[in-house]
Every structure is written in C-alpha cells, then in structure tokens.
Image (cartoon, rainbow, N blue to C red; front, side, top):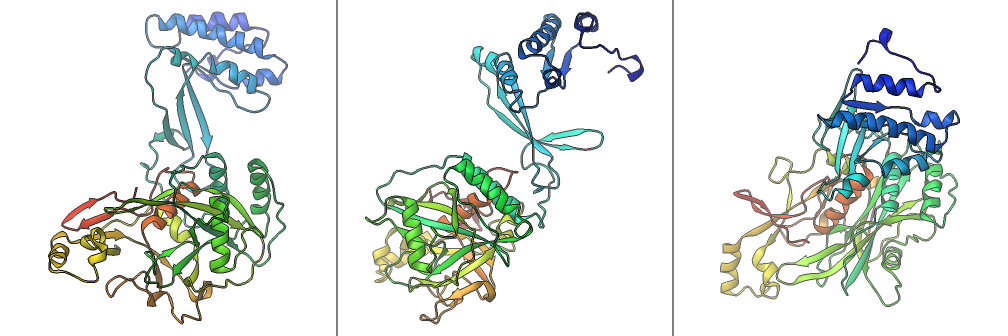
Length: 467
C-alpha cells in the first residue's frame, strides 16, 4: 500500500536486499504476482521455488503472532505446469480463477473455485470446495454465490456459444447411469438454421471432436446462426402410456441394439427418417432418467443422447407412431434459466392426473363406486408444463393421421398442445432442464421449470415422485 513515489525497486540480482526490506515491513499478506515472468527471463523452476520459499518464511515469522498469508499468482500453461504442480504441494488452499468469455451473462465476469491444497489435507480437517462468481468493475471486484447476483440473461447471446459450452460439458462431465434391466433411449437433436453448411471434419476422440466443433461453430456461415431443438408429439394409441405426449424421438431397447446410443439412433430413423450416423455428430449423453410410476416403482431407465446436425438433411418423414414433429427455437428454453415457470403463477399451466387412477389404473375404465369416492377424496396431481411456441414453418404433421398437435389429447380435460404451443412435462422436462444447464456457464443446476407434481394451490408442495 505504499505510494508509487516511495515504492522500492529491486532488480533480479537484488533478492537478498528485497528479502531484507520485506522482513522489515512485517506484512500480514504478501502477494507475488507475475511469478511466471521469472521463468520467461531464464530462471529455472528450482530458483523460483527458492524465491517463493524465502518469502514464505518471512510470512511465517509474522504468522507466529497473528494472521498472515502468502498468495502466489501464476498463469497455468505448458511452460509453468511443473512450477504449478510444485506449488500445489506447498499450498494450504488453491484459488482457481476462470473467466467466462461466452457473454451469456451481463453481470458475471468469471468464477472462482477454492479447493484445499496438499498441506491443508495433511491437517485432516474438513473443508468443502467452494464456488463463487465475480464481477469486475473499474474500481473493485465483487464476489457472490452463483445465481445470487442481479444478472440478466442476454436474449441475443449467440446460440453457437451455448452449443459449444454444451459439447465441452458433455465431453468432460461423466453422466449418471441408472442400472435397470428395462431401458429406453431418446435422441435430442439440435440443428443450426443456416442456408449452407460448411464442411465438418469427423473425429474419433472426444478431444478431437471438440476441436472439429470449434472450427465448425466459428465458421462465418455458422457463428451467428440460431439453434433449434427437435421435439415430437406421439400419436394416440390406447396401449401407449405416453400417447399424445411431447418429447424426443426414441423408444425401448431391442435385442438388435448393442447400446443405448444404437437404440436412440434406430428409433429416430424409424420414427422420423433421420439417420443420425450421417450428417450428425454425437455430442454426448445426459444423465439417465428413471421412469417412476406411483405404486409401481421404477419401471425403466431412459438414456438421452445429444446430437448436432452438421449437414443439410431432407424433410422429416414422420411414421404412424408420431403425430407431428417440431423444430423449437433454443432461446425459448434457455431464457427460462433466469425466469423459470413457477407453479400457480399467472403463466402457469399444468397436466392434471387423478391420483386414484395412477394407483388403480385398471379400475379407471370400469369406475366402481369405491374408485369414484377415492377419485374425489384423493384429488389430482398438477404437473408443471413448459410452454414451447411452435410455427407451421418449422413443423411437420402426419398427413395420414390428418391431425395437428392440438388434436391429440389424453382425455377431454388433458391437452398436450394448443394451436400455438407445445406443453412439455415429466421426464422430457427433466431432460430439457439438464440440457439448458449444461449449455450455460453460469448458475449451475438451474431448472427451467419444476418437473415435480403439486397437490394443489391450497397446498403448494412439490412431490418428488419422478426419481
């Protein structure tokens, strides 16, 4: 904190003089910035560590009487990796600053991760890693918990940045696998609305795929494009428990499938005529989702796989299993990260389900007297829906069924779409929430809407009957 005019200056050959001056100051905190510059001017790692060690002993003398700390700032690259590894073994705590250059938030400059170092671990004390976001202004730096700032998501953030962030997360974050004998898989297909697709170089490893995607997404034809996600509405079938639901193409695992990914690709080809092995890149897999039915436990595990279109494709050809297919603007989902759908709010819509019918499904048609009493007494569950606006321009309907999205409903009172919106709910809503979460560098574990059912506005409580 010395004024600039009185600050001493030392050359690289005057380390003893510097140590003498530093010990006279008796500092409570010493910050060594630009240490990597010593490597750039010819000093080896051992001499830099000796310099840091001398500063550490001076600080330790101060720490005998009161609190003192030594902070070493280093920039991690291939030239300083050995120095950083050596410092890790000499540190109590590690502070990792990472800038968020995607521009997805107008109020966040980056994030700070705090983890215990080697010396602290030797003390065998409990310490939970911490994550803070920070904002840099002209005169100060503000730190705050993720999601607690007054940040506003930019509606005009480039979609390719979200796709790039999604690809990096899927390549680096292991998905959660649910071991269950009955399995299904779905394909979450993303396309970029562009007139001409630039060439894409397929890769064999996750690292090479990220590099190929970086070149593809930064191409002038792609960099400013809008992203869309493919949804379908299932056709109405009496034996299909998801009849009329909005979701993703996919289905049950068959004996011919060698993996969940094969299941997703086969079902997409059968339902929509899309061959995901040609002109698409497999970005990765989201967490498995358990299909849980009230009174029946976990029925199966669903594995969502994410794909990005890299070549021009022909028009979708929907099968008799699909009532309609829709390309939905990605911003309709991403903007909900900062403004999720709240139960029983003004914009709230829900899918209703009678509790008695969920517990005793085989009596829902015969309606015995005790079932009618139970239906009234137990009431309904209300599942929050995420409304997704769609247009005829980016939709394909099944011409054989001659039915649009609004015509398919589970009953007279339950409708999965209107003339302008699709209503997403249940496990498909869980998948979209994770997809959005993985596409953003800020506010981890943010949901676009609550997938859990509510009993009613008079008793607003979420019931976790999905997991």
